Length: 350
Image (tube, rainbow, N blue to C red; front, side, top):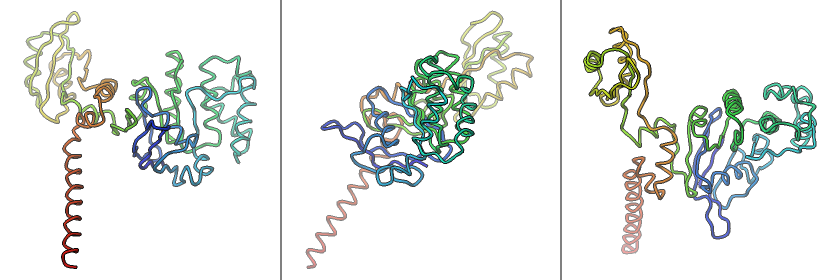
């Protein structure tokens, strides 16, 4: 659905984005992450056709954003961080205006009514936008992105400034939209990204440093697959039972953190998921697991480690790609040397 190859963007002497490459399949929900000034908004603006690129190629559903911008843009719905609202218009009036602007072919009233019902703004259809709360304005912004039923939704900080209840509502809405749309979601609320997105792309200093799902990135950065279980009952008896669980390498008591129960750090053998076995062990002994927590790195910890690495090379090294890149560089050098030798031999024969 989206293909980005060798994308670079330069503002004068400043290189904002350098050689970005990624692809997004139809129906994927992607989290696009990066610290302020990393270049993510620049890439998103290029994807929407708002900014031109300096070098590379961007295509939406096979249409090049530079060579065939009208067809490419028809397939995109964009919600910027500050929704592009005309606050002196009523909600329905504004969405009709967007409908005409986009030259949509669907029946107007039925299409707009369907969107308002989906976004849950049909109850404010005849109210002025300037009189709406922040949450409702954000919903109207999302509604305008859906006008024309685009295949791709690009959402830049869709929950910024919302209260916790509104954040949950928008998050649930994005999850529902992800069933029928390809979505790129940019947010600084990483728990939100982890809850909604299947995959994350992390950019720093203009370069993409990671492109994978959160679990894989966590595993690359840390081998700690241990879990902490809070189990009620006798410390000594539970410790002995857990040590006998198949796949458990080591167990250590962390002491009593809640009356009548103890916390246990359980370390598994390599590549073994022991959660089910630990649960079955507790049940067989008549005990209750009050909580079970993984020690895997959260997306927030992954993000901080990679963006604080200092350079692209150091971040890639943390992910274990150093050797691979070294091999590729050596292969390129070998090809160049072989080419030079071949040219020398040809000259000697001549």
